[in-house]
Length: 120
Ligand SMILES: [Zn+2]
Image 1 (tube, rainbow, N blue to C red):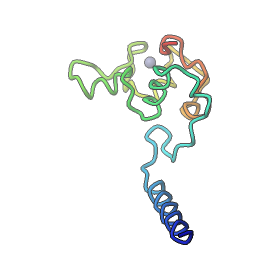
Image 2 (cartoon, rainbow, N blue to C red; image 1 turned 90 degrees about the horizontal axis):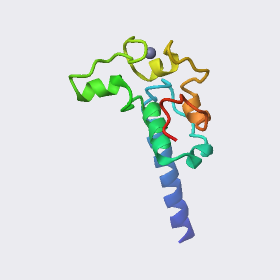
Image 3 (cartoon, helix red, strand yellow; image 1 turned 30 degrees about the vertical axis):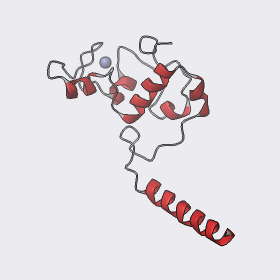
């Protein structure tokens, strides 16, 4: 019985490793994403959802995403009017400068991202 369980565990571990290796690179980092810092669990659900959307590259508060679901939206930043209004612009908007980088979405989830964006 123990050999059977050990065999199942070996198969499961190999399958998980194979699946993880087959993941596409993260669209924001252009690399395999790191683990999200555990401190994120202390944030309100709405903030966590916002950070998860930014990490995915598809954030409903960015016109890059909104343009994909509505033809009446222009893919321009409402602050500086540059295009595209995507996650990379979020970090580089000249009207809302910040010291954070996309990697901080994983490493520093408790940072105050931008006062007008966060809901808590
Ligand atoms: Zn901008």
